Amino acid sequence: MQLWKGRFQKALSKTTNDFNSSISFDSRMFKEDIEGSIAHSAMLGRCGIISQEDADAIGEGLKGILADIESGKLAIDSEAEDIHTFIEGELTARLGDTGKRLHTARSRNDQVAVDIKLYLKKQVDEVTELVKGLVGVICDKAYEHAETVMPGYTHLQRAQPITFGHHLMAYAEMLLRDLSRLSDCKDRMDEMPLGSGALACTTYPIDRTITADLLGFDRITNNSLDGVSDRDYCIEFAAVLSIIMVHLSRFSEEIIMWCSWEFKFVELDDAFSTGSSIMPQKKNPDIAELVRGKSGRVFGDLTTLLTVMKGIALAYNKDMQEDKEAIFDAIDTVKMCLTAFTPMLDTMKVLPQNMRKAAAGGFINATDCADYLVKKGLPFRDAYKATGELVAKCIESGLTLETLPIEEYKKICDIFDEGVYEAIGLEKCAYERSPLGGPNPDNVKKQVERVKGIIREERGIEK
Ligand code: ARG
Image 1 (cartoon, helix red, strand yellow):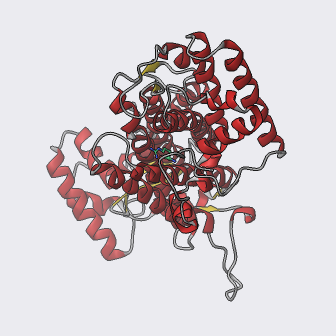
Image 2: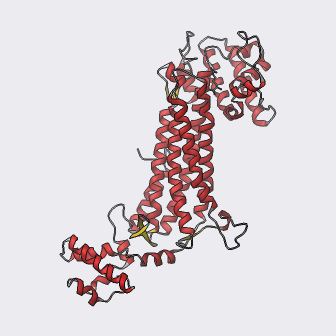
Image 3: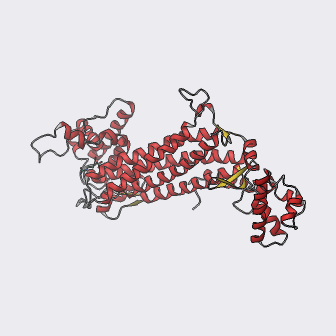
């Protein structure tokens, strides 16, 4: 069924219809399309543009269609041009002439815009809940490992002692910003485009505030051309989803490294690992690898949206139908990744003794050794140089700063005394980094409480 009868003598060829059709991917918005149409018909009735009887009948008819699709009684026709055409066609089949009045003062251009916004607003909420779930798991693990000493890295070289809880909470902070971005993105898309018509609004005396209220929008779009041709909200959502994937991908990369025999800081639960078809010893972190890999899809979706939109003149162009597969794929992928990642992290076994062993190598307390001299009055640059010489000596003799005899210390700088061993103790070095933001266990526990409080809040974020 095509809506644009009259002007045309021939029907579309099958291949053109298939090429033009979006039903295979926009049918997922059937609920939003019906919600939008119910609000539109109610507004038309209240404004006297169609009779109240017709408005009521259309509303009831649409509710019946919704119930029938949801119960499986009504199958969505894969031959239809799009979901809007299908629902309107079904309504007309059920109500006759009354159904044909639904599209008064409306175009599919403002209809599709309102459908996508209604759909995406719900999806922002769903992604938000999944991110909050992950942040909760991170918080629990971080609390449990607030005292677990591990090496912190820069350039993937052991750098300074931190705690595993502190390391994990870095991801909680990234994800909190993602929650804030999701919330901002939802706020900005909360403008109702219905009433923009095809591009130039309408001469009917519509009241757009009625539809906006019925559909739960915060505001109304202020320019009809913009109302139908804006897809910023898809791009912005895809950008936020891409940033979430950057974070999940970095986290995955670390988990993959930590699972290797070279690190062995963690072990994934069997339920979240896979084996090899040939190498009997293998236990592979496939889930983390897939999350890392799927980030590419989401960045690709963002690039698709940016490219589709960058060169099209105002207002609607059919190019914009390409928005849906991209944003839907980005949403599906991120939801799938979060759904797999969160329980994988939750069940991940942490091996503190291996972290501690790694922390004991690599001279990660060298800064603290220099700081020890500084606290005794030496300028930092001199302390740095003396400690560098000590490290070179240790490397030469196969010792660590902890095992190097005090005489050797004194040979390089006579300020050293036995107190140095306490000052470079790894636990002390990690735990005493206590200014706000540091790895000190009480600090980490306080951060966990703060973050948990934030994700418990209704809106999920501090503004
Ligand atoms: N299926 C179309 C889309 O997704 C709906 C809008 C069609 N409007 C038009 N003028 N052809 O963009």
